Image 1 (tube, rainbow, N blue to C red):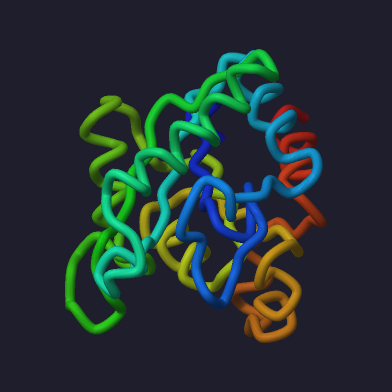
Image 2 (image 1 turned 180 degrees about the vertical axis):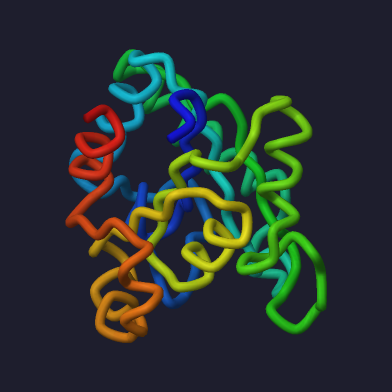
Length: 181
């Protein structure tokens, strides 16, 4: 395993997800333990990158300034807990836009590799959906599926071949325990 890079999905992993989208910092609510888990990983020397599909932008539900404010709030909470998020990558496109950045496509992961000059192979990718798992596996990352967000449903629907390649745990907090060994 790469000992430096940890990639995190956002909605359903760090914060509670919503079928009506997270449209403001006020709607963004951290899942208990997630902020502390990120801070712990950061303090252990991990490079923390968030890779998140944000089709609410394409749908006109919020703008990039609002998204930046949401991410500033999230980053501030992590900093208050003694850690840092090194970078946040997002796909602003809708599911039918045919872009290369929307997971399960690998554009955001390629951006991370390029920006940080790190190999993705063996890095951990923590997510709650099959799109996260597929992007991770395509880039030779080790996927960790958390049961928060859509994770329980994802776990039920994974085929046995894919399930063998994925580490499954309850929360980002327990994923951090796995990553830190």
